[in-house]
Length: 248
Image (cartoon, rainbow, N blue to C red; front, side, top):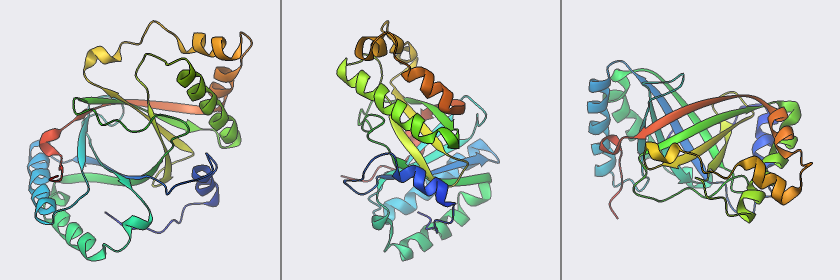
């Protein structure tokens, strides 16, 4: 894991703390988006680097996803989740060895790499899933108008509350907010899929649920859409062969 100083502007730092009053430490994800020079060579290097984590008995799972749609099609997304900011301290020696091995293995096969850090937003979405059958993720990166930030958050909370109340039968999403390493305010909405059939939406519509819970004159979706600058959607396929899962 790379360590970093939170040098981003105060506005973005506030966006990750205003979502809800913290009662527990942030759950942090480190995300690396990598464009490979050559896919075959990069994948071989990724497998080689996993041997380092195995030898170090690294307790953090490293999931590797291949992006198959959207502007980053063909790139690889590597995620390490479930960390805390405090828990990321005290591993400087391990981090140095990790980066040295990356420089020998993955680095030479990478055309470009971007590291970002995201914080789980439990009041906006469901907890991360643990279904071992998950094969894909549909990911929507939502860029919010800074002037409409709180309006967006309150609208998202109302949508979640309505879905919870009516036991929405469709796939539920996990939400993350960008803390550092990109353009914001930015939220990532991640939905697990066990296959292509899972992309089929249920007959029940969001709009019908909101009307049932809040009334026919409800403006939740209108305010939500008004708050959004733009959305980028992608599909990720889990590459178990490139991932590192620590021994139990």
